[in-house]
Length: 267
Image (cartoon, rainbow, N blue to C red; front, side):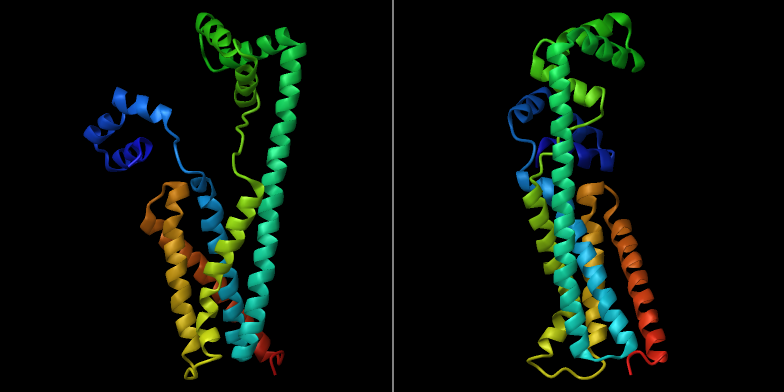
């Protein structure tokens, strides 16, 4: 287990001995020389939230069609259309959002670098005021400013964090998009699995929707629990919360389907 993971686990359990072991000088020195996490860890949020959106929106479609009693073929047509169209839309959104954030960061970084190069006195004054506002004494402020401004690159990065509150997002926009799309489709297809199987194997009437409901509930709870990898919350509470939210969305869709059927839309 990585040192930071051990520290988190010790904090959750209130385990002082494990926390002390995670903060041992030799462990810290080794961890400082190692990579703090695989690159794929940065995309956990994309995968979890992509999967959650996938299963919620797809099962909402299934529920609406089931409520209107339009038949399994309509479930598949609307469900698959929603799955791929909405998944693609989310992937594009993730790509553009990540790309825009990187471009904004790069633009501000270039501006700060230019200001450090051409107006160092002004940047020194800004950084000094930032540290004073944090409550550092004049002596400590002077020491901090001296340390952070020794190298131009470190100086610029310090200005980005301390003045603008910006840290560079290391995620690649295309990878974020693919992670979102992949999880959206892989998890979002679960509510449709029983209907896809029904194309090859006869399934008794009245069975498909309950099975789809069960698969969706399992997926919602599992992914809601998996959110703790991002949010650090209690997995049981997070899973139940997502199950309730997803169930509410499906209930609304089902009620709309019933209403439309009553109005003759499905007839």
